[in-house]
Image (cartoon, rainbow, N blue to C red; front, side, top):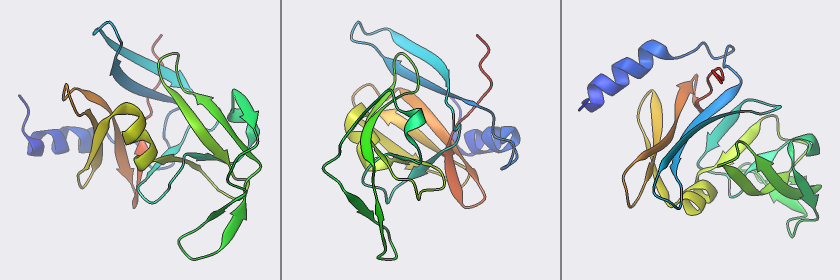
Length: 164
């Protein structure tokens, strides 16, 4: 078993340059049959910032959504007190096994935001942040569901080339 220090060193050695993040996400999740599924997916905007302050997942435009409908949120409030309008909400399918529901469309956001509060509730998992990476872990099985890497001051959902 790898120690935390070894995991940090191993991950740090493999970190991509901040402007060179590849276009797919790898996540492992147990299916209802108990078998573990590992998958990769390409998204149109391949960067998802892991955001502990966001109450909802957010995207900039509707082209990333599988479905779109009106939202009960007509605007969002930012940390500095300003507001931005939403144009609806919908579903983003990252893979056949991982779907983000209730994703707000907020044209003023610069990047896709993955809400820690929303994803931990949806996947019944915890997120542990380390200096160079973070880990999504199932609460009951303790299996690693996915991870993010720190680039600059932000954590991004780990993105790798699809080897399918």
